[in-house]
Image (cartoon, rainbow over all chains, first blue to last red; front, side, top):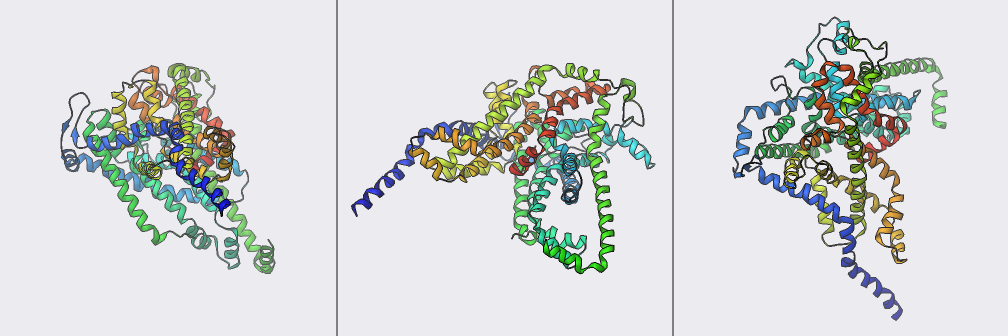
Length: 307
Length: 292
């Protein structure tokens, strides 16, 4: 009995003392992290919300505006125009990027010659900046000397002014965004495909299933978790991203026809210095992202297969 | 393997047609790969080819794909126009972000995984919660904090707020460190080792693959970052490559060959790293789940 107590007590002592004993270490290990988190993340989130209820251009004193910014945001036709363009961008990019990536991931998952080289080529855009991508594509789309116009001349289409035509500018941007998004999507689909057990394909082979049937009955159901994950990140990405490419291709033009919500947000904050209004825009964006993500989360059990 | 052979022999009757299907399928696979691969490559080839053209060759239609003569001087022109300082700034900025964020996130991860303190789990949940919030929400107030600190147009303003975007990294390393069996650090602590030694001698070496993958993706993001420098930097002294190219596109619009040489130079370091370490980039993407 006695020896049992003697063994147990140091443990109990350590357990109760440990709660506070680590504090100096906590300061050392978490101090810088926590300070940065507080100053540049936690406080800004709260401050940004407060800012969205005020009018402020940094130079003059801040004034309280109540729900004024949000009312203005809902009433401004430009808001709805930029929302519509963002939805156009989303619908243009997300399904096509996902479908093409899955298609090429399946090809890159086969036993092909020079596999590393092929994958290297398909992943290549990943290493470049949005700025570099935009500048090169701007030159590809150039009216007089661009390669795109030379390519379409082959099939007998006359040259187009891709980035200065209100109807063509969004499709042109969507192509760039899909091209830029492919590598990361393909990588995730490849990871997903590698998780599909070989035996299932062999079993399907025995049943005499064709390639398309194999895809429908084996591949697609088993990679729905990957598709779900990609859908979540690409929808968030298309609501909040695209700035680097659009800013360097068109700055939202011509006549706001490629003005994504985030481009207008940047302009409101850092060109017009309407910090309150821009904060209200940012919080509106946050709300949209939140709602879309919650909807997807709810809908997942209808189509996502988990084993 | 046995099952597979069995099927093949039992279906000898349709063997021929299956083989034909196989050949047709493979041809189709390669056809699609060539078309897709070409689409991925053409912008890069066009960039490099334009970057090597002489002035008059830039304005040929249809475009010439293999320039002659090769005008290598475009690259030195681009280097001078962009400025050596811009390249140095980009290296410095990226290095600070990679090593700074590496240090802050691994130490933070160790803290959350291994140290005991009140409200630890609640605080960790707060970190997780902020990851859902779009960067646009924090960007504006963070800029105001920078203004209040007097850090506009300075290296501090450029670098330190980006170090703070390590909530995800902290989460990642916390998860990683949690997987390391408890007995190891406990035994070391009993032997009188401090948390700092355990962190530096045990946890960091054990998580080397994760560190490298996270480092590569952080480097990628830092090197290619555009919005934050655009907001913070006003003078040419502080230009990074993305900002320089974006600003110079007006001036160099008439010298597309120099412009494209500049773009090539800007992506070259990461391109070389990618050619030798494709695997690291792929691991980084699958591990962090995000890019850009």
